[in-house]
Image (cartoon, rainbow, N blue to C red; front, side, top):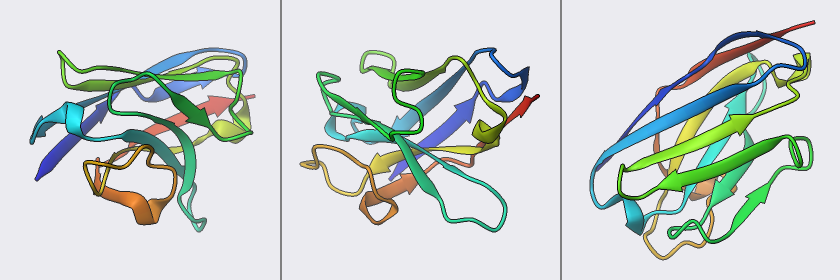
Length: 126
């Protein structure tokens, strides 16, 4: 089992920045690709960003490309999401995710997720 705990959400004005953190425990963190997803009420959970096990490669949803940056610290068992130039449409609950299998390159689809965090609310006011 992998336990994931997000932090860093909150209320910010449009154009502002937030940094989300996700602390992992349980199995060896560096064995898992990691990702961030988000979900609004009544909508499906959608992919935001993902990073490989070593942190050497990343991928982003088009809606956040150039504004968000995913990173990880395998020594601290933590993955981050730096969010800049935030827009009201970025308002969602953000979830940290670990891949279902240890050999996965990315985790960019909810069906590829083995473990979820509890979520953290991000609200961007206009």
